[in-house]
Image (cartoon, rainbow, N blue to C red; front, side):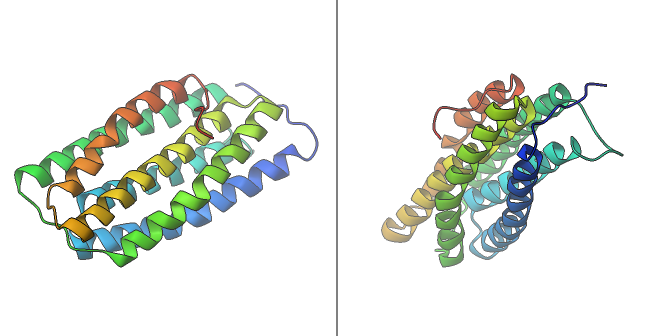
Length: 201
């Protein structure tokens, strides 16, 4: 199994970033899914699903530093990419279901609040993860940086959809906002599987 060589102090920074991610994702996922249920919003449901996958992705990176469960960087990076592919499928199914059923989402102040928070925080986390990934040469952390950046993309799309829905009362905007994220997810999944961070952060 591949061993991981990390410069002194870098492991603590990486662990801090991953635990910070796990803490935020716990809040983000819980709030987003609660808001999705109350507002019947497919874009919030997709966003909440992304939060769950981001939680798993951060956990995968942490496993590299756990003696009992350590996995290689290559396997971790590939798994992060596969999680993004899985998310693309989930988002597509949820969005089309919403369009075909003509689901009308309600205005969600809670959803607006959590996506705004993610939009502010996730680019910072993504940038810091990318910097640490370059410093220690960790492809799984690069892939996880992609996950964090993708979360910011989805937050922007979801927030835009929620605001448009709130202002103009267009029932289809919610599903379209979710579908607009799918090409981004697929592109970033390809990059993540190769351990490349996106250029957005």
